[in-house]
Structures are given as structure tokens and as C-alpha cells.
Amino acid sequence: MNRGEKAVQLVRALWFHGPLTRREMEEILHVSRPTLDKLVKDLLRRGLIREFGERRERGGRPAVLFHLNERARVTVGADLELPGLYLVVADLAGAIHAEKELRLSEPLASPHEALRELAASLLSWLDELAIPRDLVGGVGVGMPIFFEGNAVTVKGKNLPTWIRVPAREILEGELGVPVTVGHDVHFMALAEAEKEGLTDRVLLYVAFRSGLRGDVRMGACLLIRGQLYRGAHGNGGTLHGAFVDPEEIEGRPRGEAAEAIAEKLAPHIVQAVALLDPDVVVLNTEELGELAGPVEGAVRERVVAALRGEPLGSVEVRRARVTDAPGALGAAMAVVRELFDHPEQLLAGEVVAGGKSPVSLMDSGRKP
Image (cartoon, rainbow, N blue to C red; front, side, top):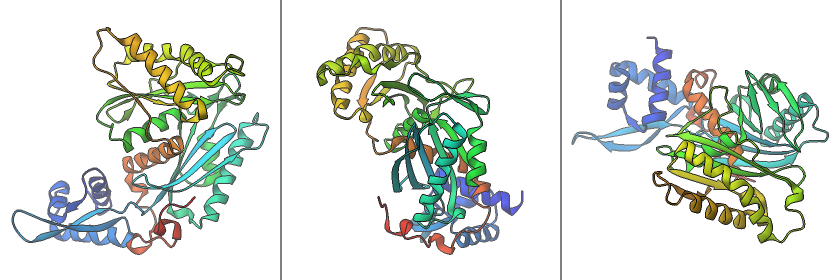
């Protein structure tokens, strides 16, 4: 195994097990100290790792700890809730450093034009933030889609219709960086699991999303101990018919509207719980505005009542706690997972020595 392959192994080891001492890295990589010292020196120069304090080893002198430099790259996450678009810039640890909300131009019937506008808006924003392209490790884009092979389809009541669109190919051509395309709710669930320490649980995540005409749509995702369940074709978690027409809730008092939504959508959750047997159900109603609290309460009440006495294991039903751009944040986190599945991408090109970005954004923390 050559040094480049060992460097890839070391980056992965620090991501999954860090911080580590030199002795621990030697044992994981099965290399000599001189070889390891060369690897560490190279990765420090590239800015991919950093010193992380000290730890006493086996009663001896304190040993220097090394950790992945979470600011060596940024990832960009986009939540395309047509026509709304939410963007975040995050580091490799999933901390958001900038975010922006905007709307794509109407009409949205042409997916190629909409995706090119998304890419142009993203590139313009990165220029505003003075983030160089080689600092961007990748872009994740969540959309309300169905996969058909490598193409995506958007189809639903009150949604534009896109049929078998090569979205990733279009976006990579416009952006010039690797792009990960996925279900918006899958990415929301990933953000919740990562940030709330639920990666060792079986998690059913349910998101209530506002449509173009005041309707309410509901999507779901199953995470099995931190791994997204995508299904045989990439569409795992789709809830058929989980939709409330605007006519069913328009003009009604808030409490009545919430009850109408819960009455129609709670049975979908009950069936999903019975089928999937999760130990945590997370409800994200944040997008519903003033209806969020009443809907969450009404749905929870119905789900708990329906499952009472059923021969199921204990199920915790709780409110989503990651509500600040969860779809865009999860999309950025999906890119991080891709990077550490293929860490050779991190080793392509140079990073400023010491991992210090020239961008004030990455040095001064999050900015709106």
C-alpha cells in the first residue's frame, strides 16, 4: 500500500475514531513511526489535520493528539422546497457558518432552467462570502423527488412536474464540484440523527411541509442506527396520499385546522410505526408556522392513542429539535459522509497551511 493510500486510511481513522495519538495511529495503520511521521507532516501541511491537545499514555509522558481539521473544507447544503430554496455553508463537523433563503423565479416547469438558477444563485452567494471553489468539498441538494435510476422525478398535487431529470449531472456541470442529490426529508432526518445523538437508534422521522397553495404534505424517513433506509430504488419512506388540500383547512380556526390535518395524516404515521417498529418517532411541524404546535400535539395524541395496547415495543414520540434549516444542513452532512466514504477527494489539491482559511467566514464563526 503506497503512502497516498495510507494517508486516505489515516484521514478515515481520524474521522471515525479521532482524536488519536501517534501510537494509536501506528496501531490502526500498521506502519512504522518514520512512515507515520511523514504522513502526519504532509496532512498538517495540507491543513487536513490539526493538533488537539495532549493525552497521557500508559503512565508515560503526555502524547500529542491529532484530529481532523473540521475547517479544512466546507460543504454546501441546499433544500429545494419549490419554489423556495434554503442554502447553508457548513464545516466538516456539521456546524453552520452561513445561511441564505431565497425563491427561484417562476415558472418552474423547466427543471433545467430551475436547476441552473439554483446553481447560479449558489455560486453568486459563495462569491459574496469570498469562499474559493477549491475549499468546497461538495454540494448536497435535497428535493421532493422520486428516483428513477440516476434521474429524478418531481410529481405531485400542487408541485411542478419534472420527469426523469438528470439533476446531479446538470448541477455538477454548472457548479464544477461533486453533487449529492437526495430526498429532502431524508436529509432532514439525517441532520436530526447526527445532531441529537440518535445514530444508535431506529428512527422514524416525519416532516410536515407546506405546499405551493397552502396545502400540507407529509414525508417520512427511516434511519437504522444512523444509516438512511433508501429502499430498493432510493425512494424508501414515501407515504402515499399523505396530503391535505388547502380547501380542507382554509378559513378554519387554528384548532380546527390542526385537528383536520391530524385526522387525515396521523393514520399514516400509525401504519408506518406498526410496519417499521422504530423506537423513536420524530415529528417536525416547524414549517407550518402558527399551526406547528397544535398540529404536533394533535398528531401525537392520535398516534399514542392508536398504539396504546398494541403488542409493540416502547415507542418515544418527540418533537424535532433540529429546526434551523434541517434539510439544507442534512444535505451538507450527506456530502461529508460521501467525502469520508471516499477521502481521496480530500487529498486532491492543496489546502492553506494549518487549515486556516483566508475567508473571514471560517475564522469568525457563523454569519447570517
